[in-house]
Length: 279
Ligand SMILES: NC(=O)c1ccc[n+]([C@@H]2O[C@H](COP(=O)([O-])OP(=O)(O)OC[C@H]3O[C@@H](n4cnc5c(N)ncnc54)[C@H](O)[C@@H]3O)[C@@H](O)[C@H]2O)c1
Image (cartoon, rainbow, N blue to C red):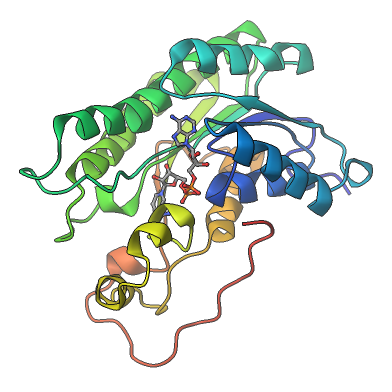
């Protein structure tokens, strides 16, 4: 059976865990070759071990490699994308790496250095990834290519639990992605933003810890009664990366279990969550 991403070369940033890791596995399952990148080399190495265990080389058509990349450093992103030149050139980039710093807060609380750091990774990183992706698509004469940039649902609704730098950075991702989508539409390069709801990944869960009140304040807003899982985002990314979504462009692709459309949510037990493959 031919996979939905057969023959495509992809880069995933922030691939060492969460959404990036689940997406890597699904991409390989669908026939892509994947360069996993992350700032954290140690977790990247253990992520690769998990990937090879779940989808060994004998059961896939594409290859998987890793490269340490800090997305806020343009030269590193550029080198990662150039690494795929010998594979036949980039077809898909998932600009997914992002941070939500614990010192982020409201307008008074958020320190300037945290604001700058958040913007450098969450916004500049996506810009660099998009910029060098376009150059690579052109270099290889690609007529169909897909860029998926991770934003967040917090860029669509206001929250009284402020993380101003993070929210502003994700709003910038939405606006930037929309504009890139329109600029490059006739070249066949599609750009979509992924807008996840709060997830059951370390990025948020480590921060929430055992604080039941903090946790409930968020959970009550989910119509499904639970946080999302990384794999539920990864499935959406596969669709956006594949040619199945050839007429899907410039969207704020919301994967939130209905959260942003809810006023009063149902009572009763939460729905069952799917199992992640690795994270
Ligand atoms: N978890 C959530 O609740 C949630 C909700 C909405 C959006 N998001 C977004 O989803 C994306 C993935 O998050 P996740 O939930 O999988 O969290 P995660 O923390 O598991 O993954 C983020 C990855 O990015 C990497 N990273 C951090 N800084 C980097 C840098 N400068 N260069 C390269 N890599 C870097 C981290 O090492 C980590 O592996 C992020 O952009 C995040 O903002 C997450």
